[in-house]
Amino acid sequence: QVQLVESGGGLVQAGDSLRLSCGASGRTFSLSAVGWFRQPPGKEREFVAAVSSSGGQTSYAASVKGRFTISRDNAKNTVYLQMNSLRPVDKDVYYCATANRREPGGSTGWYGNWGQGTQVTVSS
Image (cartoon, rainbow, N blue to C red; front, side, top):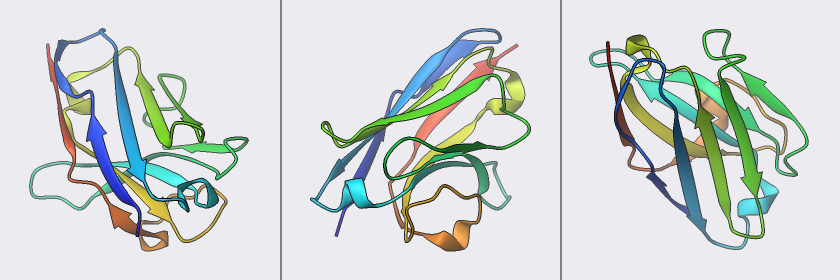
C-alpha cells in the first residue's frame, strides 16, 4: 500500500505563497490520481485540487482556481500544491490522498489512502 507524507505547511501572511509536497512510497503511486483536500475545524474534509496519474489533467475547487496549482513528478513519487495569494480562509490542515482511478476528481469517496496532514496558517 502506498504511504503518503505531506510537508511544506507553515505560518504565512495574507498574500504570501507556500508549496506543499506529498511524498509517496510504493510502486503503484504513478497509477493513481492524487488529490489535495483541507479540513476546517469541526467540518468535513473539502476538495482543493487533483491531478491525474500522468499529470496531464487537473481539477480545482472554485475557491482556489487561479491561485493554486497542482502538479506531480512521478519520477520522484511526489505531488505538489503551489499556493499563491493565500488568504486567511485558506487556513486549514491540508491532506493528500491517492484515488482508486487515474482521472482527477473531487469526491472524497474516490480516495482511500490518506496522509497525516500538514497545517497551513495564514495571518491577516
